[in-house]
Each structure stands twice: as structure tokens, then as C-alpha cells.
Amino acid sequence: EKANAVISGILASGIPDIIASNLTITSATGASLQTDVATLNINNSTAGTVSVLDTGTGPLTADVLNPGRPIQLSVNGGPLSIGVINGSLVNLQANSITDANAAALNITAGTLTYNAPAGFGTYTDPLETQVANLVIPAGTTSGDIGIINNGNINFGASMNTSGDINLVATGGTLQVSGFMIGAQDIRLSGATV
Image 1: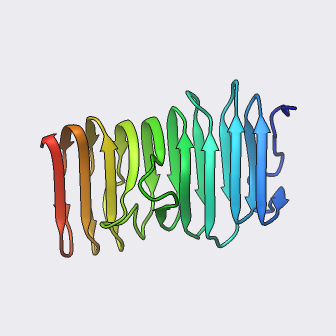
Image 2 (image 1 turned 180 degrees about the vertical axis):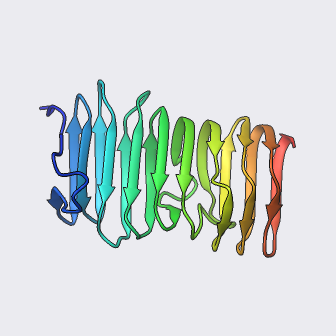
């Protein structure tokens, strides 16, 4: 049985709505809540936005399905490990964001925005994406940036990292509008770069 939207009246207060090791939510009209969990699984089937702020120190492993609709997933200071994320506009925020499902697709979105000062994917284990537009925050990170996108992608940011950069557009055009400074290795790959 599908639940209606999970709506939080205390989302901004810093007090989690749910504290647990594992949380699974099946909804038809969205979910908005604050958590302190280790594993998060959300499947929203019909309408609405999925918005989760995890106030724990992580790590958080997450699978969030909200096809064609927005997803906002934030970890308040800890790392985020992604299994599968599927939404229209996906916004991810965590100290670092890594791959939790090896070479399988991690993120499907029209637009992906993230903020991860300690790295997004790694050089040797990049996040696998299928997105039309990736918004990489301008600035400096202390970790790697590793992304393999299925198809064309436009990376629109200036990146300065003490880690390595590995950006791949599989079977498509890789367009970078900005500068890249990596501590050691920078790899750019696409049918056209």
C-alpha cells in the first residue's frame, strides 16, 4: 500500500523526524523530511518532490527514485554514497559523494547539481550518470572529481582540486566551459571534446 506524502513541520529545526539504521519510504505524492539514518531508500511513484536532509554525521547510503520530478538530498557534514538516484532536477549536497554500486548507473536526471567539497566520485571509481546538464560548483575541492556520463554533457564550471579529475562523455560530446586545475591527473574523454 502506498502512503501519501511525508510532510515535515520541523524540517528547518535540526531535529530529525526519523532516527534509524535503515529507512524505506514508498510514497505516491512526495516526501519531505529530516533524518538521521545510515541507509535510505525512497520510491515516489506519482507526483511531488522528494526532499531529505540527513542530520547525521554519515555515512549515508541512498537510493531515491522520483522519475521526472525533483530530488533534493543533503547530508549535513558527512559522506553520501549513491546507489541509484532518478529524478528530473537532482540536487545533492554532502561532504563527499561516492559510488555505491560499482559500474552500474548511479544518477539519471535532466539537470544534476551538487556540492561536495571533499570530492564527487573518484578518479578510479567515477559516478556513472545519464544527465543532460551537470552543474559543477566553481571553486576548490580536496578530493577527486570522477564522472562517466552516458551521452553528451556540458560541464559548466571552473574546477580546482587537490585530487584528480576524470570526466568521460560515453558516445557523446564533452564540453567544458571553464578551467580545470588538478593536483596530478586530468582525463577528459568523449567522441568530441
